[in-house]
Length: 434
Image 1 (cartoon, rainbow, N blue to C red):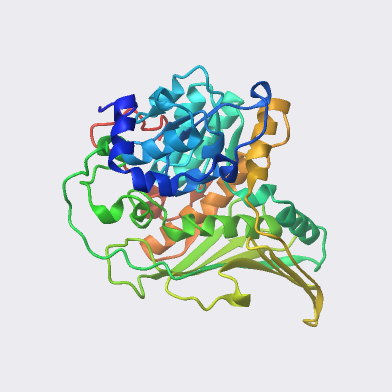
Image 2: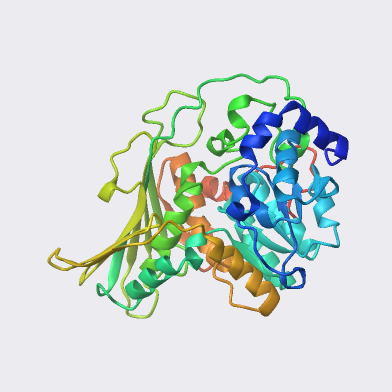
């Protein structure tokens, strides 16, 4: 495979795209660089220098990306030095200077890279959704338990004081017994159009980018950012932005198992393009009583990717319906409590958060043994909703699940789709045990 980590690669990139690099070169302080002494810091390698990398790159000690242009930007912005910029993630796993790995690559790389990092003895922060499919999520739980390493899921609201306080009040009964939560992700995404395979752009190690996923020839509208909308690489917007809303909706609802019933309807109602995931969906999850004599609970998730008519003027959020009132909560910093008669009890706003608390929680768990806010067991119960909703949409029917065995009941076709097909002939990053 092509080696993209040489100083020559870096010089070529900066010479040919100097203007673009200057525009992207956000100061390190704005990207989260910490005034932490070296002996107190956790040295980590960052896999992926795309949009999500901006939350981490100011602190990265090494960077990895199979696109030479993005890699060059990552090296320059992080200040890690050309020798610490690589195209092959295995170089990071072999680096004794690194304590941890942050996985901010496309979804199809999340679990394979995280599992490889654990096998290499590295702590892991893996972006949401932690896995591309249900089986990979189970493997991440098993891997974290087997290795004893710190493995954090990138659902940042778990560490945000504003959200934590609001959820704690819900769990303590601010509106009574909450039986239903409704979350939403509504925005105007835009079309990815129609395209055909073309030659791989110069400087892109496409074989490395596809990795263990099924091989597909390069096509512009399934590469950078557009990979989200292809089943081979992404989980759609249910797994992209919806991961956050599903996570704190499930958290506030107080359910810590898998649902026993899932029903999702939707499809491509609006866009005529190459997207394989729905642009419109309504997904319902029913949870059996969490304790003896308890009540069932329901979580509803709505997604519309062609609208800017938001509930409560907020593109994403969740409502919690209790027998004593209702709570509205959004990661946008909005929070309101109403009583059973619909009268507002309290309403407050929070400033936009950079979400550095979640990375600090990860570092604290490594350095001091702090309790992790989003471990893999928590991640699994959230991303399972993503995978089960996408599966229900794909097969066009409701699913019944046994939460204890984590098996789909009475539907062999759907059960077979809990895992994925990897690249024919095998690949070094295919997880063991799939």
